[in-house]
Length: 144
Image (cartoon, rainbow, N blue to C red):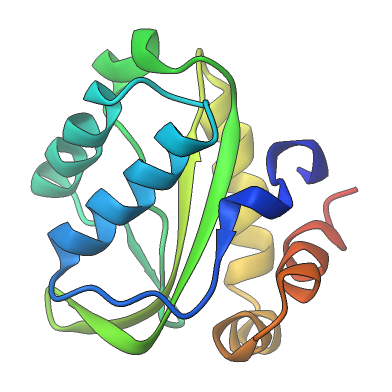
């Protein structure tokens, strides 16, 4: 997973007024790093309308729909922290790990992320991290 997450895709100290604002911000970062076309952001919002991407431990993993694969230029992750939290349908989200994956790559990425993010200690470290290097370390230490 280390090859999917670059320093330029980690944004700490973000703010969002709503779940949809947080998803848009995540999508914008994926666009900024050249991983997706702008239309992918709409697909991320559509995915959230059909099923929540909140996975627990203050973490959500927004990603596009199956029909959005053609707007993915390369597989990538973006990590955004929201220290003040975002109301995610009644859940308090502090970290979003946005996924862009062509083909079936998202299944493997989701499985690897779940291993890390469902660990309460790793999730707590991720929520409280103030260092880009630490975020990358947390998300890649068990998946290399």
